[in-house]
Amino acid sequence: MLLTPHTFVGVAIASSISNPVISVPLSFAMHFLGDKVPHWDFFSNTNKEDRLKGWRIFAVMSDFGLSVAVGLFFTLYALWFKGESLLALNILLCVIASCLPDALEAPHVFFGSEDVFSRTLLYVQHKMQFQAPLPWGIISQVLVILACLALLSGSLLRV
Ligand SMILES: [Zn+2]
Image (cartoon, rainbow, N blue to C red; front, side, top):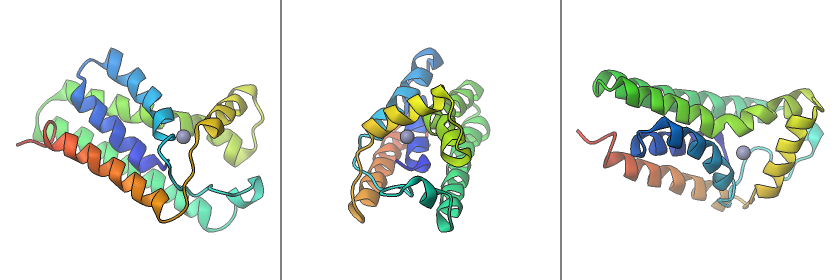
C-alpha cells in the first residue's frame, strides 16, 4: 500500500487507542495487514531496475511528502487545536510505526543494500502484498482513507 493510506491508519489508531504501549505496536502490525488490502503501488509489476528509473522515484517522494504532511497535520491539530499534547505524541509515534516497515526496506530497494535484515523484511512484505490492477488498486486505498476519516470524524475531528 502507498504510505499515505498507511499514515491515515496510524492516525486513526492513535486517536482510538490512547495507550501508546498498545497503539504503537498495533500501528506497526497494521502495516502488514494494510498491505493485504488489494492495492496498486508504484512498484506493482516492476523489476529491480525499473524501480530506480524516471517517474517512479518522483512518485515515491511525492507519496512520502504527502504522508509526512498528513502525519504532521494531525499531530499539530491535536497539539494546537485540541490542546492535547499526549494525543499529539501518540499520533506522531503511531504514524511513524505504521510506515516503519517500508522505511526499513528502503536501503534495500534504493541502494541495493543486501543486509539480512532488510532482505528478510522485503521477503515478508512481498509475501503479504496483495496487488490489484488500476483503477481498483487505487480505489481500495481511497476507501481505506475514507474509513479512517469516518473514524476520525467521531473522535479526533469532532468539534
Ligand atoms: Zn509495506
